[in-house]
Length: 305
Ligand code: GRG
Image (cartoon, rainbow, N blue to C red):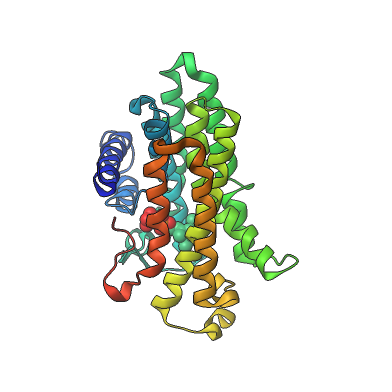
């Protein structure tokens, strides 16, 4: 199966499951549903849920049905973070994925509540799912714990706070790495490790996937910086003026691309343990690396696959 076919097949499965998990019309206020749906569909790359399924189903051959709630929960958490990140009190973005951001359509209050509702729904669907698998309950609880740690104060939320305050560490590199590892890489890494935990992978396998996730997560954010840097077509000056510390600001565009490529190469080496079984995962890493070579200028759409 080609990479695109396999990726699209997971995507379709995830999209259908997400629709189901949103519940019946009339169960909660319609404005809230519309605001949640607006940001969930058509959505972006679905990278985190695809990574989850690539490990749970692709690598360990487990029943897809058992993993889908986790995959969708990860996408709901990711979506809530984007809605909140776009708010005037945070990044103040009017657009997301080429469309008006959630709060620009529904207002700040509905956007905050849609994010809150998606975060809660993520845990609701994982709990409901766990009850369907009493024989594997412990693995479900462990996987949920990993996800709550990675997305909370010790992970994504903490990273976002550090980013907003631009909390300086010993060096620019340490500061960037702390922010990126938490704000961006933590949720990507846990998409792999939670799947491995649920599949009852052994310690070495979990360690390899954790390292792979952390490395591609960091590379992913660096590449995103490179793409944004090109798109904005502004120089160092804006980086400083806007108070934004990014890889291209510190290392330049070429330097950042090289760092990202080195991280991807290291990540790929972590997959050796799994041999041919990890082909799809390695293709995802290559796909992420290739994004740095293609700018929006050549018509490449960051959300397409
Ligand atoms: C508000 C708690 C809270 C956290 C926000 C994820 C995040 C933390 C902020 C989003 C801003 C940003 C650019 C973060 C870096 C991570 C990133 C590149 C997110 C976009 O992820 P993609 O490319 O999005 O997977 P799609 O559109 O494909 O879903």
